[in-house]
Length: 257
Image (cartoon, rainbow, N blue to C red; front, top):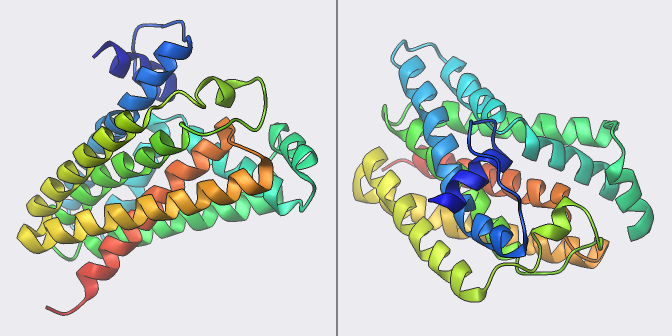
């Protein structure tokens, strides 16, 4: 619970006791990260459900995605933008990392964030037609699944010797990653069961596996391209996992029974 509170205080805007982070604490916070996603995703899902009762078209999806961004202080969207700018520069790793550290956002970052948000909103809006629980359940699960990719990546290497990302790199054991993976898949299946019975459970669990595979491939690419992970690339993993999960569940829901 202390690790969860520390992670909530670090990775969200929710009030939590301030904690000094050392390497051991960073490892425990990484293990708690998917459950941070479940908390903020659950709150955003509540927004989707409540506004969805009005039948207001795409508005619940927009408000749900906006709530998730607000609750995290747009931390991971900022990481997506910086990562896109760095990779889009097509410069060597050291220079690309320097681009990522700048405070401004370039055209590549803006366009990438725009498409990530559009994918999330369109997928949620599409799910709203399945059942009243489909979109809220998917958003809560997606926020959790997206952060699971970071848990696995945090067992790797850092692109820089210092900085926020380096503190959370190399801190996760294989056992912690496996335990989290099993737990996240079970919770995802339970969310799918709420959304659409046993079919939904299978779809949500399968989408979670696919999202984790996409995050693993992205992690491998970032390792080769930049020499390791940074705080920004961790953020890109979160957003990638969320988007893949939401898109796949939406596509599966659209298949005629």
